[in-house]
Image (cartoon, rainbow, N blue to C red; front, side, top):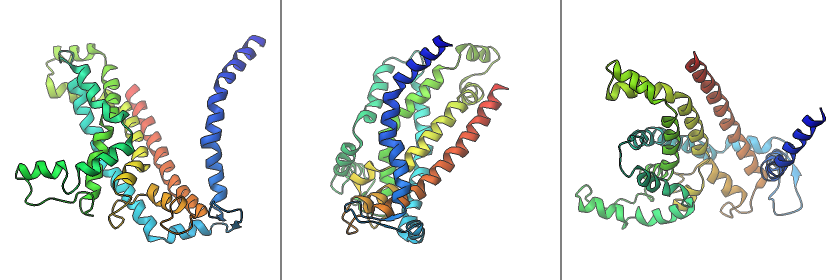
Length: 300
């Protein structure tokens, strides 16, 4: 018993730094947010008043919050399928053992992932601007008659951000798929080929079913991350034009830290954040249940 106790003590000792950081930077802020959400407080002064659930009621009545809520899901619906399908196609290609230079291709495709998102956003403002490289290329190819203000036009701004987000996060999703592909035994493919399966049939009947468990995890990660998008939109459009790209994260920032709405309203922003956090948590629970069922069916 003493030996077991000492082993557990060492485990907790090594876990302590991680636990301390989690409590300081995630645990306590989450708990504090519930408290702040019940206050009428700017976050900049000592005086605050308890208002109960009024902040939550005000958030629920604000059409701009629901616009940001809708845009968050619009971004998710636009991004997630592309995050899953496009990297999977390239992962299958790059997983071929006979492909020369596969490591170089993987590195090049992964580079945007390690580039700071805010820097990417600032650079993309110039590339996708009215006189940027994208318009110049399309005009030269004859695909456009006049330049498009990709980020300043409400019709195109969300589409543009979705395309850039897919490019930015392409590499990490490709690595996830590669990990799944490399976990599939080659013996299965060889056995299927002996039975006459080739090309698309191998992919449909061997690769896809065995990738479903990791695919469910990739789906969960992309759904949650897409709903939390902030830095890319903040640096490229700041939620504009006319709130066409305003998402819940930029909405919260505007009330909590920005002077756009006058004096910051930290209590109101906390309520908005918790309101949306419940949605994300419910989605995560639903996807966890679906993922468990997929894994369960895969082991039968």
